[in-house]
Each structure stands twice: as structure tokens, then as C-alpha cells.
Image (cartoon, rainbow, N blue to C red; front, side):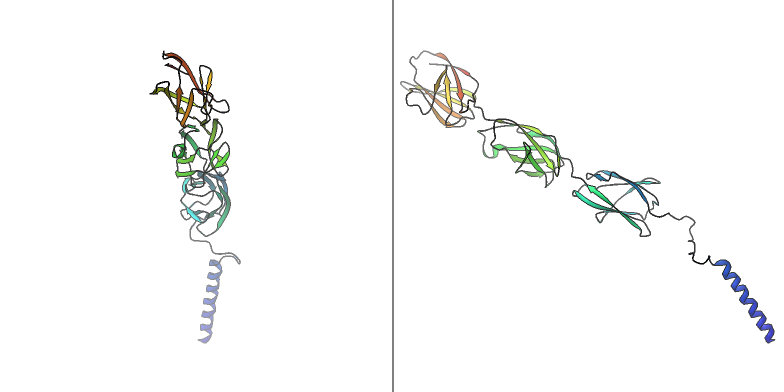
Amino acid sequence: MLQYALQSLLALTIVLQLATAHAAPPSGQAAAPRSTKQAGPLVVFSIVPAQAEPGTQILLAINGISDGLRLALGGDELAWRVLNDRRIAFDIPRDAAPGQYSLTVTAPDGASRSYAFTVLPLKPVAISIDPDRVTSCTSGTAREVTVQGRNFNASSQLLFNGAIIRSRVTSPDTIKFTAPNVRDGLHQVAVKNGDISSTPLGLSIVTAPDISSITTGSDHVNSYELIIEGDNFLQTSSLMVDGVRVEGNNNQQRDRLIYQDCTRMVYERHPYSSSPKELRIQVVNPGGATSRTVLVTAP
């Protein structure tokens, strides 16, 4: 009886050993997962482009695309979309600051790869400038110039003839500055983000005198006044009247020029005759800048 029990126990042991040997994987191998589909190791084949402005779409050629895949730029997670079975895309956040970032791709199993990525400054675009003409007589807020465009930000700078001058960004499409006192002529205005500048616009600075009107003023016994209105008049401006220079500080002349402000002067004239005649009047500034010649009929 005891011998029979021992034989039965031995047979059962042999059966169990055979069953275990058949089910176990070879030594050193892990058991296969239950799923018959297994993703390969995480591989990013390309990132195009590797540097771009905010808002740009970036394409990744990648294997093992699945819902658990995660992308992060500088630690901030990104939303991505599938283009096909080997390509995904994401957009650089529009508020991303320029600089070097780490683009991290993380697989569902936690494996990750990091790649260098550069966010470029947005290229500023200058569309219009208002006013596009400023005279030397203009002062205060009247010298404020507005540039309209797009892609302006708090760090944008304004270039006047290539040099940075003080400005202020009031919105993503507006930047303002005060026109500096510079020489007469056409000057270039551009907006700069980082090392990228917009196409320049033109701003005319006008220093030459300009006559807009000449009217008759007060009439005295031996003289009368001609009121000259315009722009860019100076205390040292003079008149050319029929080729004769009339100045404000020449005591040797009967006629004289009275400066009131940069937009108004009074020509005090002492005619030899009360008969009307045609007068050719021109304003001349120091340095030789002249206004157009205006014809006036007066004594």
C-alpha cells in the first residue's frame, strides 16, 4: 500500500515538471505580452522645420504613433494631430518667446527623446505711417508718428535711419514715436524684433519755409501790413520782394519783417506810391532754403 502511494506521488511530480517546462519561456526571456501588436522603440526621423516663428506648423516623422504620445516644448505640453501613419504635426504657441527650447517626445511607456528647437522672433511688418510728412515747425504731440502693421510686441524697437529711437507699442499692430529734429529730407522708419527688421517706410522731414497765404493787414498813414502765413518760418528768416531782401533786424531799411511764430510773419511795407502793383514775395531761411514765390497785388 505504501509502495503504491509513493509510485502515484512520483508520477504526479513528473507530470507537473513536464507541464511547467512546456509553458515557461526559454531561460533569460521575458514572457510575451497578451497583445499580438507591439510598438517598436520610439524613433523621431525628422523635425521640419527645426526653427520657426510662433504660429508655424511643425511636422514630425515618427514611428509608434498612439494616443498616449506626448509632446512638450520647454516643458509646456503641446496639442498635436495625426497627418498619416508616420507623421504628426503641432503648432508653435503664438505667445512663445524667442529663444532655444527643448522639444520632448514621450512614448506611452515613458521612453522619451529631447531635441533642440529654436523659436524665432516674429518678423514685424510695417504697412503704413501717419503722418508721412513732418515739418520743423511742428512741436509737441503734433510730432507724434504712428506706424501701423502687425507682429509688434513689447520688445519691438523702432529704427530711424537704422538707429534705435524711443518708441512705444500700443497694440500688436501699432507702434508710435516722436519724429526727431533732423535734417531736411526723406528718412527711413522700420520696426525691429530681435535681429529681424521690417521693410522700411519713408518719413519726410521738411525744414524749408512754405507760404500758404498772403493777406492785407492793418493800413497806416505811411505804411500797411501784409500778413504772411505758412510753415517753417524762423526768427532769422528774410523776405525777397521783387529781388530785394527785407529783414527783421535791419534798421537801415524802411520796410521790415516782423516774426510772430513759425507759421506767421508780418511784412511792414512803406510804399512810394499808393498805386497797386504786382509783388513777387519769397521767404528765405538761413542756409539758403526758400519757399515758392507768391505773386501779390498791393501798393
